[in-house]
Amino acid sequence: MINAFVGLHPSEAEKTSGIDWLPEALNQAAGVGEIGLDPKYSGAGRGSPQLMRFAGQLEIAESARKPVQVHSRNAEAACLDELSTHRLTSVLLHWFNGESELGRAEGKGYFVSFGPALLESKKLQRMASRYSKDLILAESDGPVPFASLGGADGPLMVPSVIFKLAEVKKVTFEEMAQMATRNASEYLPALGKVKPT
Image 1: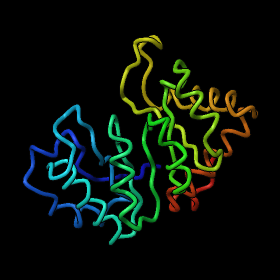
Image 2: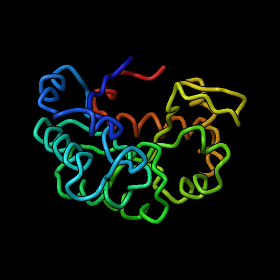
Image 3: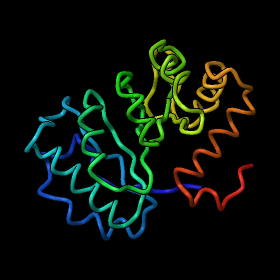
Image 4: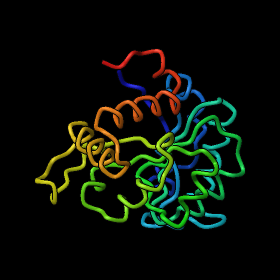
């Protein structure tokens, strides 16, 4: 089952004149994403096209009562600041790396997804061990090949992520898989209508 999300990635914020196309596209989508802030691509501060596009997309998601998936690389605090000004149905912080902001995200009830970097990163393992088991998801961020993992990529990486999450949370693989499935259904309620196989 595929649930499409639509949105303007921060890398494209300065390349487009607006997001007036988003409400109509959202009629055919499960949520808004991958949206957010990333100073790697362009300015992400006050008055920047990135921040204006991010805020605008959050407003649309709020109005449509759709979940959002947020990219926050090197802008975790700024993303959380902007998210806090909206009443959103569900938020996923994709590949969240803001260890100092972890408590703030958890306090808001935001989901955090971990990807294949978890297999090697002590920081991400520490973050996963501390974060609420009820708010953790697994992802691949694929297709992005990981040279350090032999070039592996895509959805086939998710079981390895679940295995590492089980290890750091000190539960069995089966328990962690069930938790991740349940959390996915909470994040995206349409998933709850489909029984996992």
